Length: 407
Image 1 (cartoon, one colour):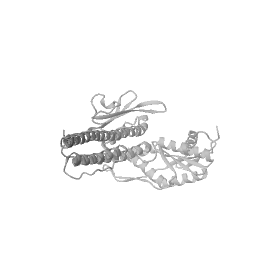
Image 2 (cartoon, rainbow, N blue to C red):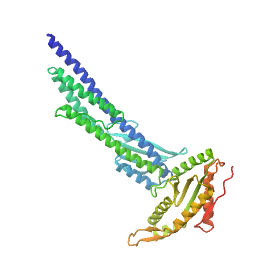
Image 3 (spheres, rainbow, N blue to C red):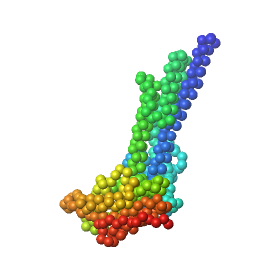
Image 4 (cartoon, rainbow, N blue to C red):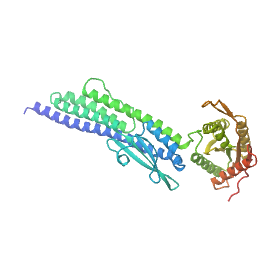
């Protein structure tokens, strides 16, 4: 055997080994990138879904759970989602239900990734949320790239005996670019792009790779939007946009700790719409919802950026006022009461009913976050008692609670 032949065969063998290693590396990096993105998406969706579903599960609010499930499926983040109570009875669901128990396995297969999360509050189990994420699109992209890469590798290995040096340099560089870009995608850099100029198979593979990278970036961007919507659902009241009860109480506890640490001042308002049942009975629940939203709009227009407005339930709201004395909180409460009194809600025309102005009033209780008081809930109770004093002594007024004595 001539030395030239030996040299060509040796170079061909080396090129074939290097090519096989690089192809396997590219496929492994692509699979890792896809799987990491999907697993991360499932993990974060699990966390935020648990937070968003907690309050409606505790309140057995099937309507809110149904809306949450529909929004998740409509956003494309999940293919199916359902909520089960503590006895395993379905409360709400949306999407195409998977067959059998495949969707709830802990491992991802080629069609579906399933997760199940228990909804618990203070150690009490209220049920669980289950969802499945389709992998068809990612699997199809990966399979297409895989098939093309394998076909290209076989063709190149057949031709490398003749053009070993030329193709060896060219192919190694192109596959190295793919490998480097794949590792970058696996590290979270989803805007990677490789040179896809030309009409050969490598250019087709590069275009498939660029298409996959573009789709991964689009999925990641859509996921970020969905996560932000879930954060809003987890911490805000869906009707009025005010902080929900859990979010408000967390903010109040943090402010109370700050007051205790710095011996500064902070105020707390509890307010309730007077005769709200009469509004619902007279104009309907849609009008009642408009009144609640109008109330929040007026209140927020009179509060500072550092103040926190929360809906504790029904027509009952609370306002946290950092860096505010008890007298300052009472003065603000009176301004809020007058602002509501002078600003009736406008109910749009509906079902033959003309547009209507609905005048309403509020009763407000005022308390202070005392640094000597160790329990935050006691401050909330003082404001609540003051509010009910305002209601019991005529409504449409402000009552101030004295500073709480330390227990």
